[in-house]
Length: 396
Image (cartoon, rainbow, N blue to C red):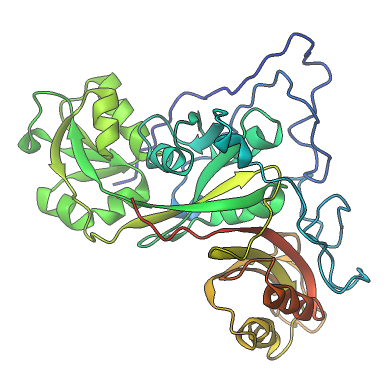
């Protein structure tokens, strides 16, 4: 049976100021290398109709006009340098102000997340920034745009799940946008089977949820004999069930979603594996100052020339300095993915160029990390530090 896609209404983010006008707003299709505005403006950001956010859609193509220019260096970015063009042996020191001081001074941060109220991402945002104003966004792209345009102060977005793997869409968006990773937060995912009041498990014929949530509860749903239907997100499924007053359908979502939408909890902890954890990234317009008095993690992205042992050399720069790698992810370099080499007789490319995303356990204030990236710079064709931030060892 083909999956049915149910979409939530588009969400608008706006912030008005008396002197703002819409005539001088920057286009949403501007290159991501365009400098960000220096003050808040009245802007409404609407999500593009990107289809369902299942794992198969996470690696979407870059739109025309937004192609990655890997050899272009932004002088205002203290992290990025081109390995072959820059005369400097190391990236410039991280000296930007630590915006986390805002939270300690009592300011209430506006934090964007993907989904609707009751989503696991909302819980992650509230764990990352207690007492924040959580702002829902329909798409991942919208959350990135909201931070860049000063509509919100931060974004908290998922990057990987212990069962479902990496969220490729957000890896691509990290490179397309000019935000910095300033922290991470890990959240235990505990799925519930929800339905309208008066509906019993035996009354259900189908269940709605995000494709990954459905996959994570496959054994339970199979035993119940329920037809699975994919929607954009877990909380959106709960909202749809409640607003449509469905009597033959349930939703796989969080306990918080049941309270928000007035649904009955038919079963708790229905995931097949109890060790179901999602890691979220905390994103900001400015980086934080790295430290060495607490555990830090650094995320980088780089590309390499094709050749035997090149990736081995790249990873060896960390191993020889006793730096532990916690994550490596490869993504196609989409601008050149269809490049056909001259010696390709059959018309197909001999290889596909890739970007490599790497997380390692060290602060950029650590001399070992600086030396490792200086060494990597010698043969990488592109290198950017996405963020150096405190590690999160706790799961809630």
